[in-house]
Image (tube, rainbow, N blue to C red; front, top):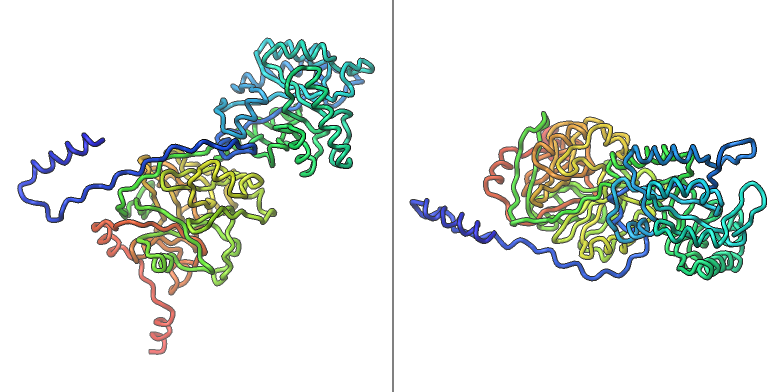
Length: 557
């Protein structure tokens, strides 16, 4: 890099016939991302896992064939083989529960099409009918055992013995976990000492008879609560499973990982694909760079008139009430800015400053979570934006596991800024289309209105962009990608849209004739040196508004 910079400088000097009109100023060195400190082991669902969406499938008995005595949860060997063929046709790659745990807690790289296969209740049919199919395909799987019934052969659904389980465990693709001692109908309804016995004794008996550590648990009938989850963790289980339909990375806790019953296998795969298409499972992380120069461009791309401010050092700020972006800039001494994240009360004249989603600014000691649980499901998988001095990331939001400082610091130890975007607009240079935007975006994401976005170029330059005319989010996304934005998220738009360069308003939501945009409680500000040519462009393209007091004076005249 130094060689090419030096060569370019030498060529420039040789070609000059007269001294430059302004003194040469060397670019400041680019920030170097510090080596990540040794991590304290993270034992919850990590933000590092958010680049995948993995369905965990729950089976019970696998029987030779169906008859009038079959249970709804039984799976015939023909049905089971057909399901394995379905997974194969989809390119699915079964992984072990240990790999799932390492992925969820530490972001271990796993196949994009990973799936996990589990079997509850220790049925002999797993060994007789499912295992030959699994072994033939080399698929890992886990059996959950309730120890009071090990070796029971009475009835239509006999259970495996310890001898059979030990034989299975000679195959490295097999894992055994606990399913308590007696399989209570609802473990969470038992008193705490009884719950402890069910969890601890089962673990001890399995470890004694199988000569290995038992790290994983499936709650009987999937029933549990926060107390039961805490008892499971105290008993030494690293990860526990429910039977609530959902993808593993979107689970509420590492002690309550979601699973799909096998009859919903195809639905599970559809959910996975939908999540990936909408940006869930699309975590993005890249270096953040700047030479300190803040530039403005006003161009048309894909039929949309865009104003884009590029460069500088970005930071977020909040207001005690609400302010215009220009007021944010005047108060903080920043050089440019754009309106930020969404807020709870949309009324233009409101002073309510409560934000939607987690938030952190450089002046906040830690991340503030969104405690309004009634909106959590609407926010799931919308992009959380976070950055430090050195890097920026866009991560699908999981409301249960991203409410405190810990997950953000685990993911990015020097994080200074956190807020929630409305939708992922551009991912790795590719614009999201209408169908993708509708998956996790709000209902008005496709309305035509003035739009605002925060993005980053391929070389790590921050971009604050806004439309100077109404556009849908899909049109905005296409325009941003064509303009060279590599990754971008939607900011609060419509009346809130406000892009300011210096003290010139370049794009506006047009709330009233005297107020260019709705005052907001959160803004993204840029610090650095304004490019002189861009200052001229800003002067030529400034939007002008007449203050209300001047309007009243003119009316009186």
